[in-house]
Image 1: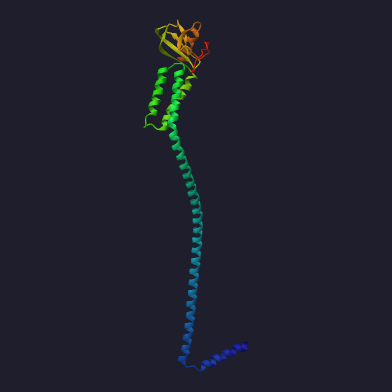
Image 2 (image 1 turned 60 degrees about the vertical axis):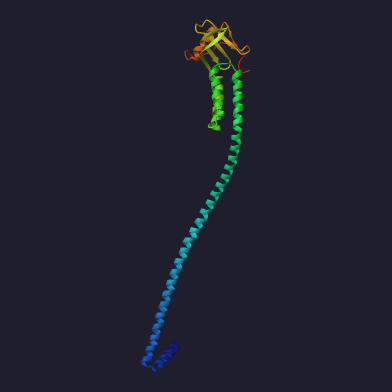
Amino acid sequence: MLTKKLTLSFIFLVSTSFLSASEMESVLEVGRENSSQSAASQEKIDSTEKQTDKIVNEYKVVAKQVEGLKLYNEQKRIQIQAQLDLMDKLDEQLVQVVVMQRQIPPLAQRMLEGLEQFVALDTPFYIDERLERIDIVRSSLSNPKITASEQVRQILEAYNIEAEYGRKISSYEDTIVIDGKEMVVNVLVVGRIGMFYQTKDEQQSGFWNNETNDWEEVSGYRTAIRDGIRMAKKLAPTDMLLLPVVKGGAR
């Protein structure tokens, strides 16, 4: 191997010994050019490699962004679908609301007629107040400026007030007619069990008879009716009352 290298060197030296100085310079210039070209090629390779690395890194970043956008778009797609489903439900509810709005006026009118009939058949306590409430509700039902919900609220409130009368004891002053003579009396209302009266001097007491639709005098209950009136006016503590059970209430 060593002999081969020495032979090649010898050949190169022998071959170069026949070259002139100018030819030798040309050969060296070609060597320098080849060396310069090799360096430039290496620089291009290094630059290309750097650009490749940069492109790869940018691709990785973009790939992550694309993956994030895919997840974001999927979430938005689910949200949009949920909103579309909600819109469909709202459309169905709007149709139902329209149907209900059409049904409310006749329903409210029937409820008012039932309430009016009930008051007419019931014991006539607070009769002016109750009839006035019915008139207010009737005016509301015929007023186009009042919404259906407000009309329903008013009639339900009237029903609730009527129901409350049956759960409490109350008393008020009124002028009644007994045996063709007007008398100012205290009226005692015990739920819907009965309605009683007592004169101011506490000498005469009686009850409302729904069968005859008139007042009737009663004896033996003067003290009980007086105590009931005092309880209703908060002038005495609530206690048991011994009163006649009268056939009454709405018939």
